[in-house]
Image 1 (cartoon, rainbow over the protein chains, first blue to last red):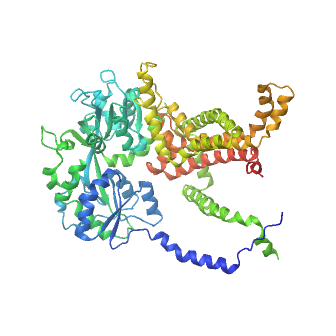
Image 2 (cartoon, each protein chain N blue to C red):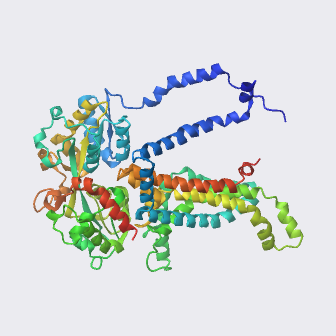
Image 3 (spheres, rainbow over the protein chains, first blue to last red):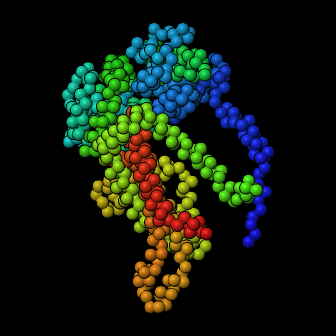
Length: 358
Length: 281
């Protein structure tokens, strides 16, 4: 066989190729939002964006000409962006516990109070206003049940009853450490700790209590999607899961119910990252989306509880306790203490790993 | 003159791939380890940290679980894959195309979708349990999901093609006249298989097992979705350290442990596998 005769490249062709590549390079990075007309927002995606697109993003675009571009990013990715000095999002819409982690890392700008023109900051619940992030709605970790296993009214009414696997048999699910925080508050409530005396949490006592319910736990869930799916598929008949996920499943026709007693109130919030390229528009968006009308327009279909007190009157009726006329989070819930979690997550993680390997 | 020889060497065709690997894999990986580990301190501090993490309860039990599951999956893919590969290597073209099609096509679907499909089949109220219950074979649903069995089933399914294709390459290289000669000389079919075919296909089985094992120890999605509370594999622990705990040093050390394990296995793989023969040269 004759040797293959390759012409080879000459130096000029290669240099030309390199030059061409370097000219083309910026276009690979040009996918980023155009600062003047677009705002890159980290969002949870899915049903959340579907509802918000029509009720918040579109009205905002009409009012300001700025288009919202939802971006998926985990807290680790956001932190990596911050550390490398290449913040690719202008606004972060995520859990307040995650924003607290970013705050601790110095990745968030202080709230620019002067930027609020449409929303009166005084109307926003004081408990959700922080130095560098501000709540946008509340939801809860609630008890969900399958109505084929427990007809409405026959379900466990407290975490103590959820823990009672003899009287209320059936497979269950609770949150995994990988979801961010296992349900050790529920374990303490089940063990008799009163709701207002939970914090600081007694970690050892909580895991001892968790051991009692463990035989009935099919799986600890790590993502919200899995928790609702397992309950809807009847893989489990009881579970601790996010009220928003549960409501979406119920509205899609899944035979599930909510027990609001002893719910853990959680917060979704906005934070503006240091190094974002469109900070001004980010504040404008926060201001816009916290107005009472916009809060109702978006949170009523999404079954979230507004943080603007002026929007309380127009909250989804699913979220109102008929006895007190207050949102369930106020009448039957306690607020999960994100500061305690921020300081103790590592300790809980170690205890969790030890416990799960038992 | 020397420059001329450089451009004429066909090895030049490999350089872009090597450059890509170095720029896209080796450099970032090295940089990641150096940057993360140097935050811990000097070599002795790093060593101390490595030892304390490697001996922690979470990592030890995750490594045991990981290796055990990977071993089970490897054994099962070998048992299931060997006959299929044999069938493929002896069959006609149509049979080969059909079977290969069935094995390869599902791989165009994402691993998450395929894992969820298994969950639909294996669940307490899944297709398999419903069918067995209605046939009266069982009285209560079998626990097929959210335990080690579920993880092993899911991972075996995902990794089976790697075993089949590796075995197929080895079996295709076996000259069928050896078996015919054995039979003609009076050996029984089992004897001929055991003394001729099995040893000749053994290197394929070893390579296939190593590649499946190497892939299995790094698995994340399938065990996370299909496993039970205590089926924590090392990749799940790494993910939790990165995403939830933001403990990147811990994650880097665990990744280093996993990488070291993989490299050791890969070295064995390299020794066992005749790469040139697999390429058909």
